[in-house]
Amino acid sequence: MTVAAATSVVQASGLTLRYGRTAALTDVSFTLYDGVTGLLGPNGAGKTTLLRIVATALPPDRGTLSVLGADPRTPAGRLAVRRRLGYLPQDPGFHPGFTAFEFVDYVAILKELTDRRARHQEVRRVLDAVGLAGQRGRRIRALSGGMRQRVALAAALVGDPDLLVLDEPTVGLDPEQRLRFREVIAELGEGRSVLLSTHQTEEVMALCQRVVVLDGGTVRFEGTPAELAAHARGRVWTSGARVRGALASWRAGDGRYRNVGDPPADAELLEPTVEDGYLLLIDGPADEETGLVHEETGPALGETGR
Amino acid sequence: MESWHLPDEDLRRYGERTLAPPVLWSVEAHLTACADCRDRLAAGQPGLARDGWARLDAELDAPVPGVVERLLTRAGVAEHTARLLAATPVLRLSWLAAVVSTLALTAVLAAVLHPVVFLAAAPLLPVCGVALSFGPRADPTYEIAVVAPMHTFRLLLLRCVAVLSATTALSAVASLALPDVGLAALGWFLPALTLTLLTLALTARLGPVLAAAGVALGWIAVVAATRGAGAGGSAVFVPAGQLASAVAAVLAAVILARIHRAFESPRRFR
Image (cartoon, rainbow over all chains, first blue to last red; front, side, top):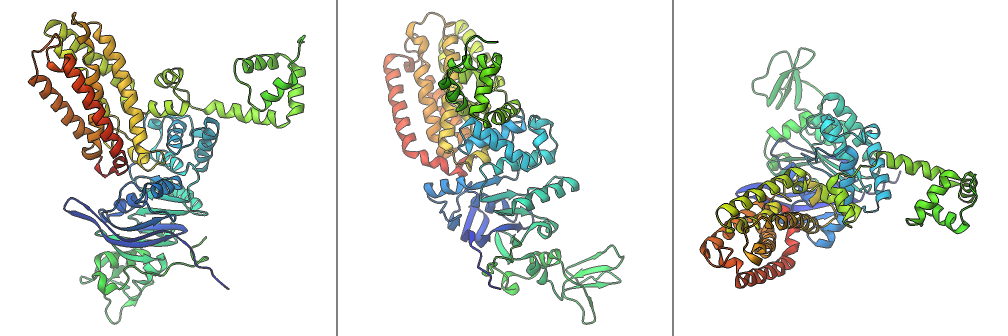
């Protein structure tokens, strides 16, 4: 079967940004393709900064960036990106006195939808898309955290953007809300590109066709979740007792210990998960030794899950 | 049964939604009462009844404009601009109430002490308004607004014009309560304009809060340094001072026009 190469939606090269004396991002390069890509990393890894740069909310100090074929460094390029972008910030602010409809309507005006009838039609469409058809007229201050997050997502969807940038979209949600939200995001990923940040490996496994691991402001891995898990192949084993020298050792549900690190010769090896691969990357040896930094191979259509 | 019927042309234009008031209202009133004309309308445009229901459904959950929004629309502001302005933090009734209280207090102090109290305080109100209009500290939707296609500078200007208009109208009313100082009672107007433009120009570099604080301190220093002259109690409120203020306003406007692209780089808005 012939498989066509996927086209890139975002191409970043050498992105660097400092806040005063603190380096937030150092020489970050990655490529984003169609489908859902997870930006995985611990707190303070630089995920929000990177998403803000991609969303044109922040210019980098150095490096080149192409988003949807436009250069956000130029006013025309920035405008072109913003017209095709949906952005959900980490802490989406609301005017609490607004209803869900009024808030999304306000964002729609910011997105240049000035005709009242067409705008209201679009507002209803996006509120329906996130399952809030019955909550349009409710004040935002009366909505639960999950519903507020869906209102913010609806606002990001106004104008049917080609690229969605979502900063920790499920943080603070209870498990049921998280599941519902994932369902919505997975659906949105069919037909557009979604870049979402998270520090939860389960989110990556549940949603993402690609994953970029960011730590300390640098890219530590870029590839598929399966490739990230494969990074830990041969380095995860089970034992009857805690292993002191392991990178991590914890008692699993079956009562035995699951260990990540350098196994002994007679170890009973286990199939690694994305979490194991992530753990080894973040707490493991430096970049040069992993050899996984800035992986250049892009996916082919059919491999992205679309 | 109605004794007259709508002309075909009016029915056609009603169906195409190109009729404007008051003919539109007249046609709608007739259609409510005349079954024959309703049948003619439905026969001419079969999709209209379905569209009509959709339109009615749309109107039912459409936002009901608040007081500020209704006032702005009645004043001729476009519906979408009025909606944007209604979300401006400093156009909320709580802030407007604070402005009225401040003006009332300074007008009383001006009557008891000296008119300069009012004349010096009034120009600071729009400066505070600018500081509270924009930026991550004042606007909960700041981050979303920054990455929206609408130019950040346009949004900021819209809000500043609204703030300046509101404070100017309220200050003008409060001026009536000043002791008799002649035209000097309006001496706050040009400085208000100048300080607002200066604050905007400095916002691009310093952010709204620092810019407003710097401009306010500078203004107080200038008034204090030139105190004693004229009925207004400061050289700023005599004709020469007003001219200087006008020149400063023009300069600030020119600078603002030259640097407006800096507002697209929100890194400075802290």
